[in-house]
Length: 303
Image 1: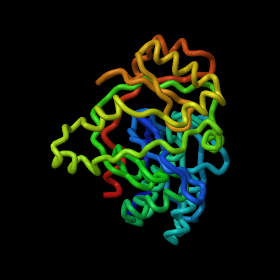
Image 2: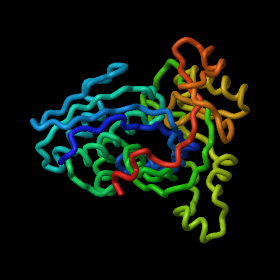
Image 3: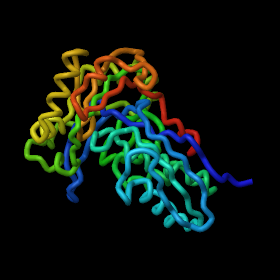
Image 4: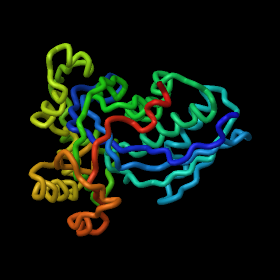
């Protein structure tokens, strides 16, 4: 009997441990290098199959734009596969948008992974990732299912092992349009590219320790988008200072406005153990104590 519905599907956010802009293509797209790490701050989706071909989204929390990435992803998969089935997509949005945490891209990836299963398409991961890249640069990462060193415009993924690590994550009230940050005159576009070992297996053969990437990242790099974001939005600088005063380090993720600090190897989730500091954030700010994930909860669905 074919599947009729899939419930409680997680769409995790990500943090950029650093983000370097190493060049620009002739078509204007920026070339990046960045270690992407998934965290347990996640949206939750429930998807039900429809036999009439219609695609509808139902917001269980904050209202999303009428034509969000979930619907665009579903339409793209429907068109590319020729599938005549549809879906009701129910989404409970937890990850803030305009944060640089990849929330919308993760929702799109979870939608593609789920519909691939619900519609019985059995597309391989690589084909889903190619379709996802047309929706957004971060979508292939979430479809890839593993923490990764990401290059190019988001399409080159080198899996990395990342130990469980706690991060304090804060999103100021302001949201930042990605395009404006990439067009900002303060953006550095010529950071020297680094050469990385291609995979955990290659690292092992090279004699590097299992935590080589974490050691490398913690002592290296920056977010090239941070200076433009701070210039455009003073709240980013305020949030960075707020975290640095408490944890001794802070960095912006993606194009902002969310920022994070490395805390330690374990930390409680604010969902069950609220921290006093986060309860006293400025009006409109949100924050959580998060843990890194070893991989995407739905990774096995595209194996």
